[in-house]
Structure formats: structure tokens, C-alpha cells
Image (cartoon, rainbow, N blue to C red; front, side, top):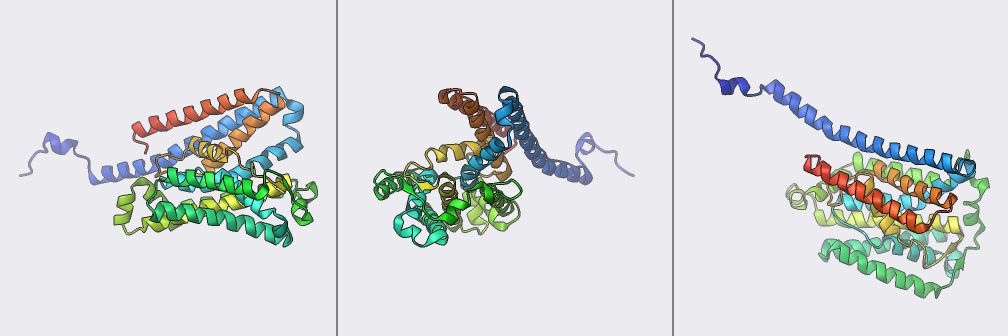
Length: 343
């Protein structure tokens, strides 16, 4: 005879129910990512509305919108590289100093003699070289990322100051300057914005559609588990700091085009802006989770805030307070998500 089902058996989920539950839980992270992205888009839309109301003639002008996107492009490229580093559980405090060093090294008289290619190559190779030093110290020298990149920050700033002797190095290569001229715009879009868009697309594909991206997330989530799974954690970290240095080199070249010069003060506080943009975009500061799209939206939010404050002649101090409030709010949202099992 068939035995009646016990209460425990009645309450136990069937295999089909378990499968449905697993599928539902696997869909939740993507849903939450969409919510974060939509939230940032909502914030950006509110800022655009505020700018349009407070300074309609200036803010919504085509020239101003092009300026906002151009200004966002330089720090945006740096932020893409920072997103990868933070996702892996690291940090890079030297990005601003690397941008400064690469920009002044690429604008020396000796470098400018090689023209457009010489400036671009020098900016990129200096950025990659600094990233290599950071990566070797952290991955193989077992230095704490905070200390290693802080040392690079000081060293790169000092070297940039020594190269320039505190003076501005003017770019005389016409082909470089022409890239920032309005005649070079493509369908009304500045070339620097197109470079930023290309870096963003490549960064998104690298993080979300390649084994490199999966290894990055794995290292940030649990480095020991990643090592046991066969991932060369040290080599992966080296690659990530090389990537960050590459982004700094590209950003340095973009800054040279934008400013038409190289200065040892270039990239000031870029490290803080890049970290802040990545955090409010949804990248987890402790590692294991990152989003390039969110980071880019974070950059656009901060750049738009700066532009609105400038157009309304508001004090820089108030602007910094507003940025700080946004960062605190973003971190509190992250903490709430983690306690709710969103990690």
C-alpha cells in the first residue's frame, strides 16, 4: 500500500520547484543591475532638467553639451581602467599622477619632434610603464595596493614636476591640435568623445564577454578560491594594473589634445573622481562586482553637476559638498544591498 506523505515530505520542494527557484535567483542580479542603471539614468535626467531650468540658454546649447561630453571623456577613460582594478579588489591612487607624467613626457621638445605618432606613443608607453611598476610591486612584490599606488602617485608627480620645472609645455604639432578643433568633429561629435565611446565599448566587452572579465570578478570575489580554481591571481593583477596604466596613457593624450599643452598639475584628483564614479555606478569597493556602464554614468553625473554649478556661478565648495553627499548615498545603498544578500 502507498504510504501517506508526511508533513516534511509535503513541505519539501520538488526538483521542478528547486529549478524554478534557481532560475529566479539567477535572474535577480541582472534585475538589480537594471535597477541601478535606471536609477543613475534617472539622476542624470533630473540633473539635465535642473540645468535646463536654471540656465536654459546656456546649458542646453549644443556647444555646452559638447563641452560636457568632452570633459567627461578624459576622466571617463581613466574610470574604465579604475573599474577593472576595483572589481578585482584593488585600488589605484596613482592614476592622476600617471596622467600628469605621461602628458608632460609626451610634450617635451624632444618628443614633439616625432610628431603626432611620437606624442601618442610616448603618452601610452609611459602610462603602461607606470602600470607595469604598480602591477609588479602589488602582484609579485606583495605590496598592499594602497601603499604601492600611493608611492607611485608621489614619484610620478615629482618626476612630472622635474621634467617641466613647473612650467607649461606648449604643443606645437598641428596635427595634434587639429584633433581638438571644431573642424574635426564627426557629425557634431568631438573626436575625444568617440575615443571615450570606443574605450567604453571595449571595456564592457572585456569585462562581460571574456574570460579575462570573469577572472577579474573571481579574483575580486575570493582570491584564494580563484587560485584554487586554476587562475593565476598574480598575473591577473599585473594585467589589470597594466590596463589601468594604458587607460591613463590614452587619457593623457586626450588631455594634451584638449588643453594643447602638458602640465605637471594635469590629472589633479583624478583618482578620487574615478573611484567615486565607479562606486556610485555600482562597482563594489571590496571587489567581486563591477559595471563599466554604471561607471560611465557616474562620470556623466559628476561632470553634469560641475557644469551646472559653473553655469550658475555657485561656489566650488558647495559643488564638492554635493559630490560628497552623492558618494555617501551610493555607499549606503551598496551596504543595504549587501545586507540584503545582493552581493
